Image (cartoon, rainbow, N blue to C red; front, side, top):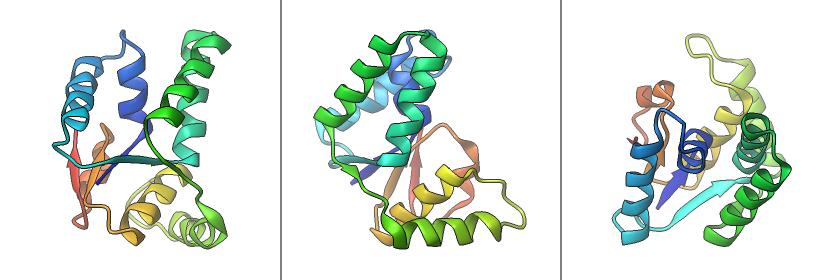
Length: 134
């Protein structure tokens, strides 16, 4: 199974993004089954449609992006336990500077034993509980 982060989803949608070609390649690998089923979370969904709205200044583009995500993969509900664990992780950081959404990703990926994370965020490479694709 592979968890998709905002950076890959936005790069896939926004063809002017510097990581667009790499994101297309990752998505092709996912469609071919190389990484197993894809999954994301409601926090990544929120962040992705918001970034697409801001970059494109088009509600239609953001809505199409959200519809594509919802049709393509499960969108996990973070829930109150994961929210609290993410909050604890966020506020207790010493070396890293993960965003709150990134902390929810770490909690979801690690608690669900998801073995791959598709992201262009280099901060995730410091983790050894999953493999970064991107």
